[in-house]
Amino acid sequence: MHHILIGGIVTASLVAALFFFRFWRGTHDRFFLLFALSFLIDGVNRAILPFLVGTDEDTPLYYLVRLICYGLILAAIILKNRDRSGPR
Image 1 (cartoon, rainbow, N blue to C red):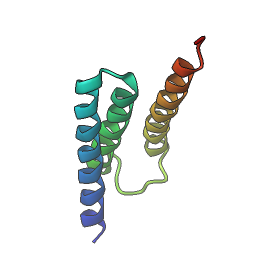
Image 2 (image 1 turned 30 degrees about the horizontal axis):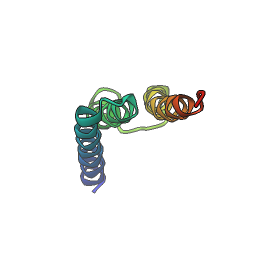
Image 3 (image 1 turned 135 degrees about the vertical axis):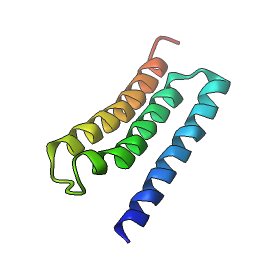
Image 4 (image 1 turned 90 degrees about the vertical axis):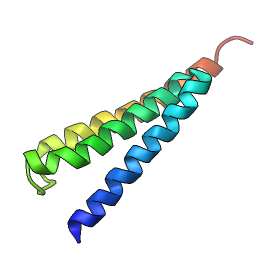
């Protein structure tokens, strides 16, 4: 059952990445690009890392990759808000 849930999470992450890549292609807004990269990294991480490290998610490598993903999302939000706060 655990593998089925992981497969669903991987699929959802990769679909979200494709969704944001599609919007990035149309707008060339780096907000969508950073979100797409974050979901792509998360999907690949959840697909490959259990085979390399194991299913024990208490290892620091899992948290490092998730920190990078969430950092990209945070950077996208900060950069988007900074672009709007300029002089008008």
